[in-house]
Image (cartoon, rainbow, N blue to C red):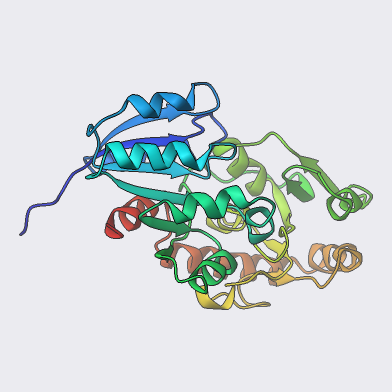
Amino acid sequence: MGKINTYKILYIGVFSESSTNTPQAQELCNLGHSVSLFEYRQRDINELKCVIDNYDILLIAKGGGIDYNIIKEFKKNNINTKIVYWFCDPLITFKTSPEFLNKCEVSDIICVDKLSVYNYLKNLNLNVHYICEGYVPYNVPPQEQIFDATFIGNIYNDERRNITNIPKIKCFNNKYNEEHSIVVKQSKININICTGQDASDRVYKILSSGGFLLTDKWVGMEKMGFQNNIHFITYKNINEIETLINYYLENEAERIEIAERGSTHIKNLNITVSDWAKNIIKTL
């Protein structure tokens, strides 16, 4: 068996309890890599100018607000360091500012979670890889289903505000990690609303927790082998949600069968955060 390469990584991201960067960094450590965290919202990003040939990899998670010229200067001072740019947000966010494309252009490797972003950058002939952000497989025991339907996430636009008017939906915006999985298991129906045409990791977290998912369609759904009416149910517009909720509350056996197939499929895809870490390293 060949020797497994391990790397010294400087990870620039957000490492709060709710951030996906936190378990990502842990999984990189679990693979044997040495990971230093740089919380760029709390530190002076200009500190990067003082780093010289200390790391094999500079991994940047989105880095909103970071001047790409600082990355260019880092690259000039660290010619042996690979710069990997990780962008997990939807295409609509990527296009809000040229800063994200600027960071892609000064990076050696770009990794994205959304197929729409991948296709956009591939058309620009950039070195981009499609890697699923995945989920953390929390071992949460079965829960009593005390909610008819829930939505877990921020209510930041009219579409999402409209679901608050549906009586059977309870909304949460502060559930993370195990607490997120607990609410999913307590819910008969779990709602997802995509941003643009892109799904967040909410989809993976719901399915991996065994939840019945009611969602709109997203780009890349079929590429992952997902099928409507098999692994979850898709709605065409917000107005359809209440009708579908009522139907699947009345048809419990059908709801449970769909949820079980969705849970089995997601676990067969090998897209946990551990898989994310392995796939990031494979791009080198």
